[in-house]
Image 1 (cartoon, one colour):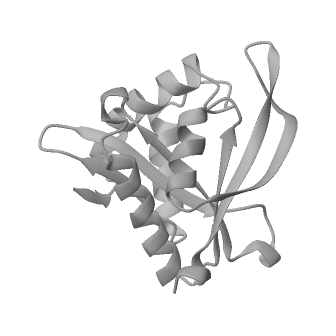
Image 2 (cartoon, rainbow, N blue to C red):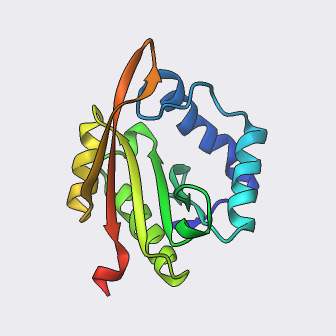
Length: 165
């Protein structure tokens, strides 16, 4: 089931997100997110009309997804950047695709044109996932991120949501 995140989901979101922050270069974010930070992020995104969704099975939250404006300023108001993270045992199960489809549907209904993912170049699973979902590589920024004592390339993959209607 895909639904809007609620305050009670914060611990489960933290349990998915913080190991990714702490142990991988999937995100360049340097420090774990507190539950208060996550709760504020959910509240702020939802208050501005941007989704913060969770995928839940009968027992627990399996993953989450959100988007917000890509870059600041009115000229980018129809270009969104998304984030999707899954629990390790949920990867490859189709849940990521369901979350991405829900984000795309939401973005279209809000009149957004582009959905963009910023992906660490070494994250081959995410690059394949996005390509299978119809995203194309729109740019590669060498050494854009710094984590674990070294630089990492960033790949921007995007989809023109208007091209599908």
